[in-house]
Structure formats: C-alpha cells, structure tokens
Image 1 (cartoon, rainbow, N blue to C red):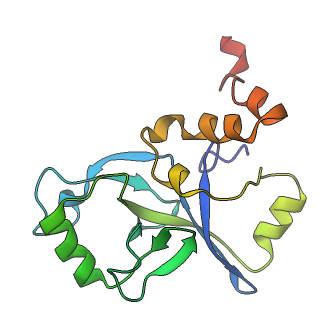
Image 2 (cartoon, helix red, strand yellow):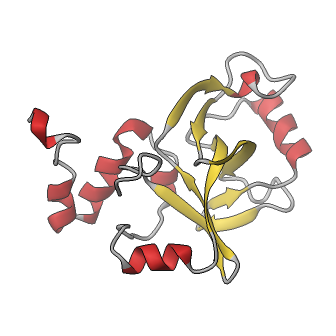
Length: 168
C-alpha cells in the first residue's frame, strides 16, 4: 500500500460490520511510554504504538485478560480489546504487565461502510488469520517480515523485498 500510514503495516482487524471497520496497527512503535499519557503510572511503563491515523489522541488496549476486565471484547482466540478502564489502569499500576501481555496504542485505523472490502477487492491488502503470538511480538519492528514469512510461499519471498529497491 503506497499510503505512508499503512506501508508495510500489520493491522489486527478488531471489528468489522455494515457500519465500517476498526483495527490497530501492530508494528509502528512511538517514542512515548504509557506514563507520558496517563497519570499515576510508573516511569518504567509500556512503550506505546501508533494504532493508526484516526483520532491519535485516543488510547486503545489489546491484552490477554478477558477474564479480568469486564466489557473486554475478544478479537481473536486469547486476544481482547479494551475492557473496564479503571480495572485496566489498576492492573497496570500493580502488575506492570509486559508487552507480551498487554499493549497500548494511540489512535486507530478505521474504514467507512464498504471501504475496507473495496480495498481488499482491489488487492490493496494481504490477508491472513490473526494469531495471538503475532499480536504480542518480541520485536514489533520485524513483525511485517515475520508475518509474511509465516505465510510462506510467495509471501515469504516478498518479506525480503527491500523497502526501497533503488538502494539495493
């Protein structure tokens, strides 16, 4: 996708219906940490990711604790979005979760009714099934390549394509 907001991104589609689609970019880390946007969080807090270009002043959370946070929506097996914010904040303050347990995003990726399906039909996106381990990667910077390699075949070959072939 040539749009710089989505070039070489991995997006977890969290919600899709007739009214539109909502997702979070998993591999665009920001030079910010949670304590810089939320009060009462210790300095050794999680690094934030850019969830997408829409409403970059909103905070979104993906986590593995649907049982701990009422109102959390299961996105894929073992991965939940949102939940009771006060309980999440208290959990972060007491447990200090790792990036493999809970991730925080500013903004989101959004599409109006039918927009994402149009883009998919126009081959603007490569699709695969979501997997929890890919949502909580060890290194988000390598996630785009890791996902393509995991898909195998021609996608594994694409994973080695340089970002700017003129510099190859």
